Image (cartoon, rainbow, N blue to C red; front, side, top):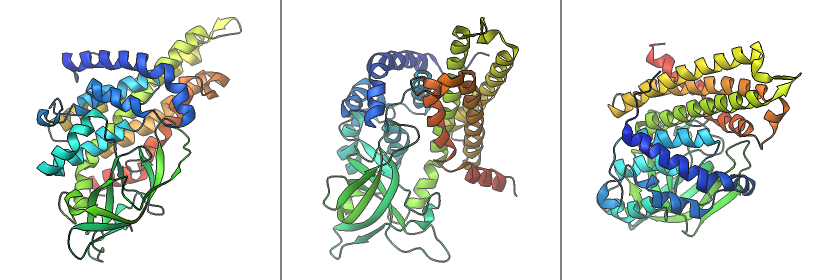
Length: 385
C-alpha cells in the first residue's frame, strides 16, 4: 500500500540520511560497537548536516521545522542499515522538547546554538537505582542556597544514555519533599554542566544491545547549579515529564516498527541466497509462510505508527494513544525479529549479521520509556478499568 505520511521533503531528507549512513557510519560501525560509543566527530557531522537543528527556531541556528516526521525518517533509515547514531536520539528526541518548551529566552540563546552544532551534547537523568519506572520515588535532591544564587545537588542516577559524553544533563531532582497527598510534587529539572565540581560519571554500563550508545551511572556530590539553569518553574518537573511522554513513546514505537521492517528485509535477502539440501531456503513453504506472517505484522505496525504520527502532528496524540502504540509495536517487533533471526539459523546468532544486533537492540524497547506492563496499565485506565 502507498504510504502517505511523508511528503517530498521528507523523502529527499531520507535519501540524504541514507547516503550519510552508508558513507559515514556503516564502514566504522563495528569499531564503534567494540569501543562502546560513537566518536564526538560524528556528532559534529550530524550537526553540520542539520540533524540536531531540524525543530530548532532559525534565530538559534536551526531550520525551524515543526513536527516529528523528520525524526521518524532518521529512525527508519538507521534501522534499515542496522546502525544507530549513538546517544544522539536522546539529544534530539528527548532533551530538545524540554528545552524548546520550558527554557527561557536567555537559556535558549546560551544553549541552542551549540546544541544544534553538536558542540554541546545533552542527556536526561531520570532513573535512579531502586526506583525504575517510579519517577515519583526519586531521591536526588537540590537544595537552594541561603543566598538564593544556586542549588546544591546531591544524589545518583543510572541507565543514563549519552551520560558519558554529555556536556549538559537535564537532571530530575527534588527541590522539596514529597507529601503523602502528592508524591509527584516538588520535582524540578536542572540543566547541569557536566564539568561542575562534584559531578561524576561512574560506570559505563555493559548493555545487552545498543552497543554504540554510552550509558552510564552518574553521581552528584554537592554540585553547585546556578538558579539560572533551572528549567521552567521549580516543582513542576513531573508535569513537564508527563507532557513529553507521548512523543517519547511515539519515538520508541517508530523505532520498533523500523527495526521489525529491517529484520524482514534482512531475512528475505538471506533466505534467497542461503541454500540447504540443494535448494534455496526461500523455496520452502515454512519460510514463505513465516515471512508472510512477519510482513503482515509489519504492515499493521506501520499503520499504527503512521496514524500515531498524524495524531501527534495534529496535537491529538494522547498519553493512552502513545502507550497503546508503544505496547503494540514493541511486542510485535520482538516476535517478528525473533522469527527472522530463526530463519538465519546459526548465523543469526552471530553479531556480524545485522539481525543479531536488531535482536539485542530491540529488547530494551519493552522496558525504557515505560515498561510494557506500565503501558498496559495506562491503556486499561483509559478504558475505565
